[in-house]
Image (cartoon, rainbow, N blue to C red; front, top):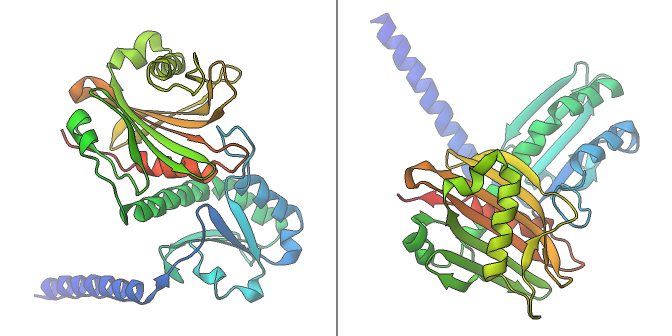
Length: 326
């Protein structure tokens, strides 16, 4: 009987805690901030010294794969004493402070929702910098994931039909308003969104597994695949021009997972053969063993002399919304 009572009380406490957290989340206001913006809560004396330098080095480092240098995140610094109002409702917050002991704490939905709050503390500058060095990769990963999710939530507010994708490739993708089908083939789709200074493009196609894995030269095979697709489908306005992988620099290659499937992520720069147009691309080759293929989802951006980081992130958010239907 005692054991039953204890279990009942334990279950009651869990339910009560869950209800308390749900009620708290319902009372929280919506977080704010532009994509890839991070609020840094730190006193001026620390921000203007070696700690601030360490923060900028980690969180404002250049983004891989962009033709012009752009920071990983836009950093907005606020002194601790004025941490209120707009800053308190920021979607991404990093608090850096002096304390008796070195520590790192990660919290969610503290002042608003959705929100990630990271607290880094130390008794001196050396302690704080050590904690920053140790935990920066985890913080960056969490913020990136949150910004992808935020992008996806914004896209869901107004989606275009992905029936053409479903019918041809057996997957569903959330594609936001403004994108239109530029080219529709049995085995290839080009979807594009135009804006005043350029455009975003999404490509969907598939290749046999050996196309990517032949001779174990993954990056070389992906470049050959991209260049052949560009020559066949992605042409410029001028005669004899088509999209290729930039020849001067090798793209970045990472191994990751999408929908629990092995995926090769390639980031680099595209250019038009025999022309001067260029921009960043991100290519995801998702291994689909069941259907003996790699599903290729690629996004590329053309926005000359303008920022491209957030445009590429939007394409990543679209691609990572993919769901396999068969």
